[in-house]
Image 1: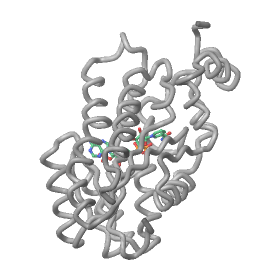
Image 2: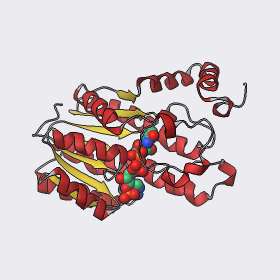
Image 3: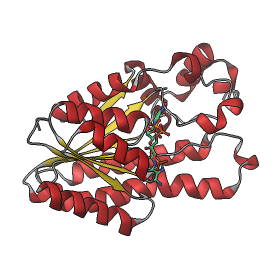
Length: 264
Ligand SMILES: NC(=O)c1ccc[n+]([C@@H]2O[C@H](COP(=O)([O-])OP(=O)(O)OC[C@H]3O[C@@H](n4cnc5c(N)ncnc54)[C@H](OP(=O)(O)O)[C@@H]3O)[C@@H](O)[C@H]2O)c1
C-alpha cells in the first residue's frame, strides 16, 4: 500500500514516544490519523497540532469494548480505515520472583491482549476497503527475551507469533501484516524505572530517535515487508531461534554478562 493523503490510519499508544512519531510521520504524508491512548489531554493537544484530519480517541486498549468503539468512531468519521498500528505498550523490568503479579497481568492485558483487541476491531475495516495493512509493534525482546524482563519479553514474543500466523492466514484477502522489532528507542517507556534498569540496558545513552524508526516503519509498510527491525542489528536477535549460544556470546560481548549469565 502507499501511505499518502488517501490513507486513513489508526495508531495505538499515539500520545508519546514511538506512537507519537508514527502519528507525526503519517500526518506529514497527509493521512487521516486516529490517535489512541488513555490520556485524553495529551491526545487532544497532539490532534490540534497535527491538524483537522487527526482525531483523538481516548481509550484503554486492554478493554475490547473501548477499542472497538474507538475504531468504529474513527472509521465512521474518516470514511474507512486502511492502516492500523498496534503499538500501545508498557514495560516493567525486574526479577520475575520479586515482581508484583499484578504487573504481569497488566503487561499481558495491554501489550498482548491490547494487540489482539486492536487487530480484531480493525480487520473488518481493513478487509472492507479491499486491502489494508496491520502493523504490530513488538520488540527485539520478542526475538530474544532478556533477563529481568521475562514477562515483558513474553508479551512481545506473543505479538510476534500472532503476527506471523496472521500474515499467512490473511493471504489472498488484500490485508497484510508487518511486525516491527524496535531496539532501544528514546521514549517514556522506562521513565518510571530509570533507577532500577538492568545492567545490559543501554537505552539511556544509546537510544535511537523515534522519528527514524517511524520512517523505517512507513517504508516497511509500503513495501509490505514481513518485518522491520530498527536499528538494523536488532535482526541478529532472530538468530536466537537456531543458535542461542551464539546470540548469548554476542550479547555478553556487546552488553556484558548480565545479558546472558548462564553458559549453557
Ligand atoms: N522504547 C523502546 O525502546 C521500545 C523498544 C522495543 C519495543 N517498544 C515498544 O514500543 C511500543 C511503544 O512504546 P514507547 O517506547 O513509545 O513507550 P511510551 O513512550 O511509554 O508510550 C507508550 C504509549 O502507549 C500508551 N498506552 C499505554 N498503556 C495504554 C493502554 N492501556 N491503552 C492505550 N494506550 C496505552 C501511552 O499512553 P497512555 O499512558 O496515556 O495510555 C503512550 O501513548 C510498546 O509496545 C513497546 O513495548 C519500545
